[in-house]
Length: 158
Length: 122
Image (cartoon, rainbow over the protein chains, first blue to last red):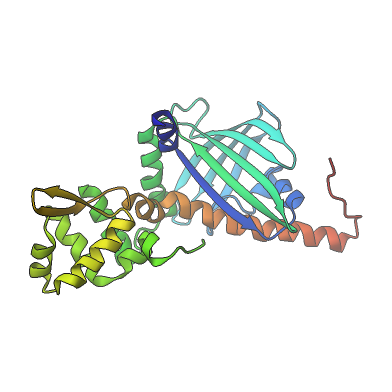
């Protein structure tokens, strides 16, 4: 039980139903010209330096935030099972010690695709940093107004 | 995101202004129901009712000292709120929105190009 808790403390699991057939959702991951159309939230663009979609291959790219900030990115594809599963290591640069593992799972659901993203961080601290610091990546802090301020104020003190 | 019942959803629990006032009070230190009621000018049954909700979602817990029951802030329930307000989840929500639009574009394009649709079969 303790071990299980420890593992969960280093993970974030997100799930989302995508209203499109699975093979198109999977296809969107397979080429830089696809990825540049959707990777990152609204307002982000990406410039790809290197891309090799096979196990052991890398994707080296820069994300350009809406406020003009550039974020260097490095991914190594660890496992590719079309159209079901992609496992990747993701960091700022090759062999980034803070790199985390992302497991994308695609399952068919009545013509739509359930995508599950399980992210495993190298430590509990790295996980907490990701939760907080993606604020900066989004380039906007005040979007959630008073609830956010209240919740963050509370969590600082506990 | 599916919504849970009021009594098990931390977001619903903190949407109520009086419950937020109780949490703010408990940030400083633990209190009895009586002390909370007195500080906030609430009837004791009202305070108890709010504390019950806050306890159920894991925002407060209670400790018994002799005849006193002391309520204090509990961090467990906050984790969900903290993560939602944190950027990671919103980053991916935004990204998945765009992925959905793009995957649908790919599907439409294939249909318009007249290529034979095929699904991968095991």
